[in-house]
Length: 289
Image (cartoon, rainbow, N blue to C red; front, side, top):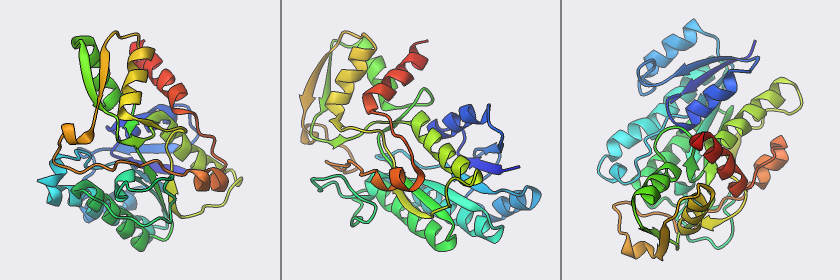
């Protein structure tokens, strides 16, 4: 029986993993801060002694990008120290680690999709702490997969899709930045990709290949385009006006271009990736029903 630990299970990705676990032959253990403090290595070790895990999927993160600027120490505990703890303990018990990271490790000045080997240069406290988490996890456990993703949304928790639907219903006009380019990612698709990787390894279809991988949905858009599509698919009548990032100042600097190249994960694990508009439609059907 394949035994999988999922941390940060009350977040968007963790909740999507819960959905997949319902019809899975694998044995899942879901934890969040109430059940397991991943900033405490002894606590993790005690759980590993009790249960023999084959995989850890770390969905836990400090994700408030603006707040991280004034709370970098707290962000570092969750985004850097915790992944290191999970990596150290999982290595000790010969367990594989899958850790989720972010496009914010890049500075956003590229003009073509970022590859895993491209130079990292985070511009925010959030990006710095997430990059540190990647590095510490890979150092502590050679059997680690890092999956960088971007613009995550789902039917669970607070996210851009839900916010724009709410604002669109309440207001006659919205202003949204058009000069930040990336790819919306449905957390349900990312969860499925992670699940598929484990499934293929366990069924001996693929070898476990550690290292850094990129995963978002297919396609490219701005936050403005994303908003227009959300409101159109949700049949919400609201005018959307494009603005520049400089007209919407925030404490954290955000990458202007953070499209990720996904060739490596597609070729290594034979992952099929849906187009972002199609996945938005799937998520909206769940939200609206």
